[in-house]
Figure 1 (cartoon, one colour):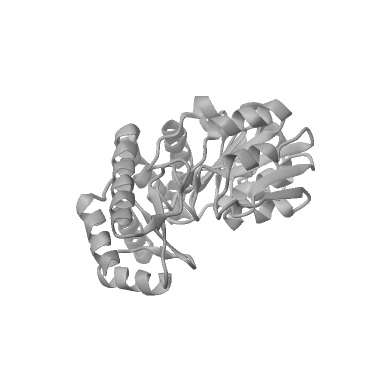
Figure 2: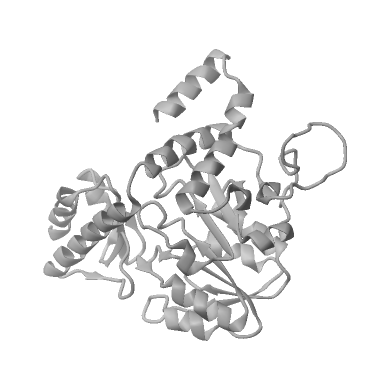
Amino acid sequence: MDTLRDALDDWSSGGFGWLEWDGAVAEARTLFARFIGVNPTTVSAVGSLGEAAATVAASIPRGRVVVPAQEFRSNLFPWTAGHEVVAVPPRHGSTRLEDLIDALDENTALLAVSEVTSREGQRLDLSALRTATDRVGARLFVNLTQSLGALSFDLAAVRPDYLAVHGYKWLLCPRGAAWLVTRPDLVGELRPLAPGWKSTGPPYGYFAGPMRLATDASRCDASPAWLSWMGACAALRLMLSLDARIVERHCLALATRLIERAREIGLRPLNDGGLSQIVVLRVEEADTIAARLRHGGIRATALGDRVRFGFHYFNNREDVDAVVRVLSK
């Protein structure tokens, strides 16, 4: 927040240097690449998860894309542009790993999934999905928006062909800073959705001339919203100062505590798969409960017949107990 306040002060005074601000994109790319463990040349700086998915959808050969029917729309709707989408229905209200695997066949071009399903807080076994896609020769697109920052990610075990994350969730970035990571040998396939002056890579030109796409993943960079990327740099420096394994253990311990305490008062969690930092409880009158939680200084999301909570490193056991006190009423 201090970074953004300082930038706004500079802007309002007319004293800002836009070239310096524009450099925040390259710095954020480098910091993100270090955080996730990839080469910066494989990272595109985009504005949202939907843009990342749509970029891949427009770049790969037309084919069959398998996606959970309950997937967040930013990782669902982009695939409908030019592809046959196989939407795998939930079973008993939850996305099932085995159903996703069963939906794959030799005609599947790509499987698109989120590591954590935000409707029920389930953490999917990405390594198992990688094995399944390898078996049929399909590519794997992984959305880490609901996990990266709170949960650690094993890049070597998953080996995604494409990895995307919007930083405004668990990476604590301003909205508008997102990344698409592409397997190195597939970078040449990428085509920008909206080619512009950023598509050529440095040194950038402004006027006329031929369009020669950058040889690396920056060819799909969006024209940056400067403040978003300046804030992203500050957030990523903070995230890099933390031990990701310790952060994950802390967040999962809080989620486990809420699940146990919720069961004691008769509430049922909807996740019966892999544990994540997101806990979703089935309730009656979810909107009313969410309003009561807000009145008590607790933010939660009402989703029809359920209410969703998320834990990060800055939360503690007292936060869990405060939630339970409100739910007990």
